[in-house]
Image (cartoon, rainbow, N blue to C red; front, side, top):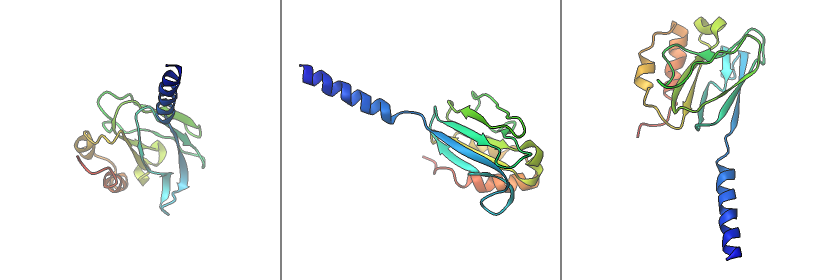
Length: 148
């Protein structure tokens, strides 16, 4: 009986250990790793509910914040200060569009897919963005998981 309880306890610990939330870093750069000016690296992430993303100002003059109308309905907006590192925990599944406010017009945008949920993709595609931001965002939409 004791060995059976120990086996169950060990199995539960293994399951809970593998379900721990992960943290992802996103760098805010004057030149993205894709060679384009003003970018996030990475600019697209696929994460799970409960995971966190830390936005790191590798270069000065940047922030990260949600784009109005480009987050799931039940999610809360967030906004980091210029030149400051900050962390966001994502609990609501869906797609999250984000930007650097000072460089939004230059196309400094990113996209986070939480839990493989793309149910708000159509709504995000309807949001009007500056031309360069729109072009980059369309590239990011193409990276989302295939519809199920």
